[in-house]
Image (cartoon, rainbow, N blue to C red):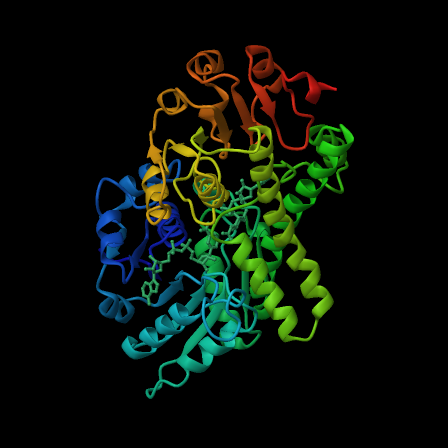
Length: 463
Ligand code: NAD
Ligand code: UGA
């Protein structure tokens, strides 16, 4: 079959897989191929059990795979055959050398650029979909333009704004699509070609363009602003606990100002996920690199408050359980970094669970989608750790429950039944503020929400 466009994506991860599945789904006249150096990942994309859990993803992949969506291990030939190449490889925080702990580790991106240069036999549009430090496109252009032949490459920036758990919804109906390009004739032509792809399903006014550096920087700033909101409300949750205010009520009152808006103001145990922390630290590194120490300090405080929030939660569990967890059984409800995903990267649950185990607690972890990843994250820990998908079985015989992920499922559990099965006094730490705390207190739990007064049956704490 003759396809109108041939599109390749290098990197079949949380972004590459779903975003290309969406292009294939919306553009049946295009052939979309996704490659990866991780062969098992490609096998999984070609199997019945996809490597990424996202509501709605399976259906889209089922409708397109083998028709105009392909997952392949043959990176060399796919680079040769395709004209438009998205790069969606991982860009983790560097763990070694200069900038360790803050800067982006660009080795995967650079290897990809070199592969593209080596195998290309015709002009290509190369699109940065990974989140990158500003000016990365320059490095990309320099590597690509060092090719010996006369092949031309045009580098575009097209950062991805989807969130996990809502990826399909976000990809189908994004707030905006951002395309950054050089403002040269060839840059503008490449930009128009990419606009044409998205215009298949996204209203033209939502496809915005900018210069290439603004585009790279916008992605880091967008994540920094979102994370900043979470840290802002979390910092206020600490004050609410001291001042007998309720953070949900404060967030509602503040968020109803249309200039502020109500989203991303849920206090909790802090943000997780593979990107917020790494992208802010990258922003901090960039600011320091350009000599902007005060700006760097400002953004670094967003990460510090996030760590502080987790510390507060752990200290609260320890303090409420009479300052000893040794031999006590604690049930963790939710290990994913947010609901509707099996992803546990940078999940606050990892640190919290490790700290409880370090106090010699016996921990049972429950999660509907993330138990496999949880077991990998905790593979090296010593201590009594158990995994149980069924929340009722996980909670039975425990001294305390700690809700760490806002799964809908946990809002609907029969807490009377759970309370009956637990050791008394029973404790409930709602790290996501998703339960009816008054009701849980009436059932008999000692309830510890975030940013709201605790409800305990111990008289000295009631005063
Ligand atoms: P991921 O780790 O899930 O996937 C990256 C994939 O790239 C891996 O499967 C890896 O094997 C592959 N890869 C690395 N080097 C390669 C090479 N040389 N050739 C072929 N494949 C190679 O990462 P992700 O979560 O999909 O994130 C990718 C990028 O997108 C990151 O920069 C991230 O910051 C950004 N981003 C992620 C999200 C998200 O929700 N996860 C959202 C927006 C942006
Ligand atoms: C985030 C951004 O929302 C996406 O736009 C971006 O594309 C993506 O990062 C990325 O670059 O990887 P994601 O990390 O998947 O998406 O999920 P979010 O919904 O942003 O949640 C991040 C964390 O913040 C979660 O741990 C969540 O529980 C927490 N959060 C979020 C809160 O604690 N309170 C809130 O009010 C909102």
